[in-house]
Image: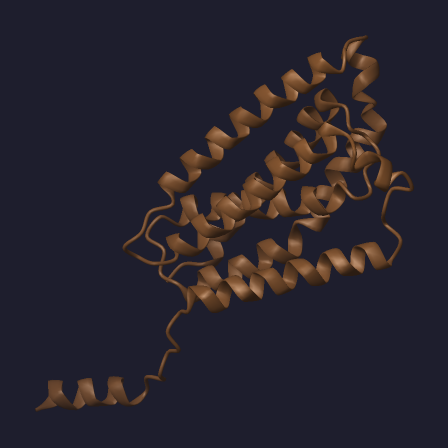
Length: 213
């Protein structure tokens, strides 16, 4: 009888939990991204030669690779919040995409007769600004995914955190391409890659500690 009373007391203190709805979560992420991008452009953060840049293959290379990384990362993260799903397949797809991005960027660089001193092409002062901007712009989407992760039940928290970090990095870099005037594939590969790696590392370290269940 005592054990039954104990169970009744425990059950009585429970509150109903709203079940996850991945479609609704995806719509929330889309809204967060659109609001961030809209505000960013409304505040005047766009390159003056944007229309000209949109005729260059390197601009669409950046947009396509970063957009793909964002989408795959978001889908991977949302799926991984289900305890029956693993983020590993999605992470492998992201690794393949990053490899393809490097190869295609190298091909664009050769087609554009890219060359010169690599140190001069790096422009490290601008590159550091790019890294900082990507880290900052990644925050809204990464935080939204982190909150969704807390409501889910991921069994591979580090894998989910890595997917969130890469999705946030991809989106932050995607937003930044509308301001960044640099289309050199070598510059993009180094500094955007460094910014994405920093974002992924930050969230990979933080999220597993704050999403325990």
